[in-house]
Length: 296
Image 1: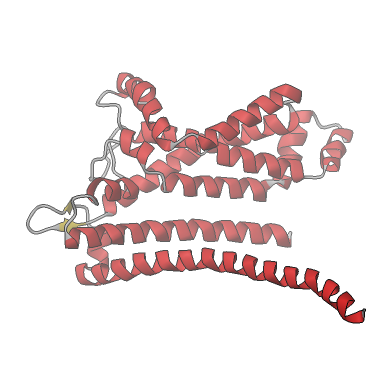
Image 2: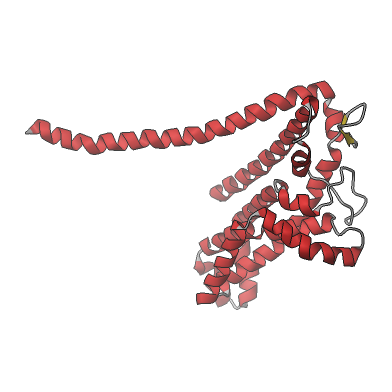
């Protein structure tokens, strides 16, 4: 009798241990995938950078893989990626935060559900659709306003600003909703208006989460490919103005990987390594923000 009870008691424990192993293997597989990516990118990129020269690769201003001698300077692509990403953040951040404020404090009932559903739908739209939208609507407007082809930094920045809105809105809204309501009630009780209570009390209290949303939005923007490829102009040279066409790191890889030779392919992988380092820095900043938030 006692042996049968022991067997019955051990079944849940055995099942729990089995599930624990399964969960551990799932976690390890994710980490393994990350290390495999890093091994491939850095394993192929570092030897090329050593051979070609770090300074010449990062700060060279000529990208000409088909001419003799071949040149692989990615500085124009780095500048293009940074400028477009900053432009996207300038466009998307204020709109996203204001939208999150509206959803948290003003929208009610079916209207709130409609806006939340629309934001979620924006997050699921493929980037190629955003690219077609910009090509048909934003590029002609930019051409009429600024001249040229309409494919320039301004168009790409506005498009990416729209694309990062779901990230900023959803995380910022969650951060605002997580702030205790007594903060708002206390501010109103002291005589502050609703708007002052929101902007002087609630938003500062949720600043870490809002900043995290902006950082993640920047990470989305700098890694975007297809939409930028369709509207940025794809010119591998330093831009002279905001109406100039540029090429980003991601579009440079997509455009040339199909026909790249051995050395050319190594240069593109090294470009991917630089992009990967940018993403690592952005995620490290996100980690620091969340860590500070936990300590506060």
